[in-house]
Image (tube, rainbow, N blue to C red; front, side):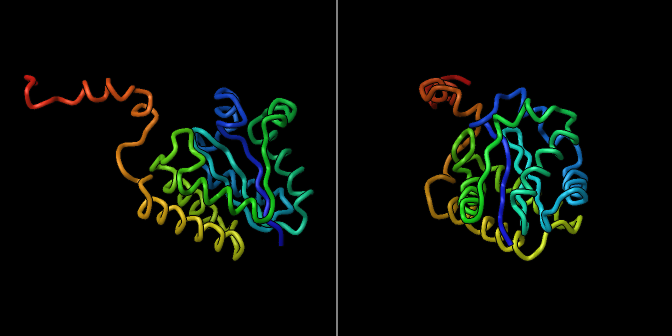
Length: 186
């Protein structure tokens, strides 16, 4: 069994394309089920957030799975493959695990340390599991990713403080000025 990942993210695709390839505005469970019906992949999970759409598969034929995923993305989102293929990234085998661990830990987020991503990874796996699209390979991989995400948040400084795009966008001095001081009237 081989691991394979195909996706787009804030690192590879502009916002308008990521929005067109977004699964989260629709039923992610239905998407993973539709993929499973067309794919040579024996296990699959669709992870979709505002900054990424990724498809994780376990397959005996990763080359065929890649082609089928591209066709699926094109058909499901009604987009010509040429419009998104240059923006796709892929990983195989151990690199899939390393990437998923970084995602679950918030290290591959637009704002490093984003706290919501671990929950989104869990939700994606749960949606696939409920549709019986997962099996022992992806179950073990995603369970490990949950543990990695939790450990990074609890054992490093990454989990400290407020982390969001809006928080990161406000310069530190302005954030300080927005916080009332004891000597200023509210």
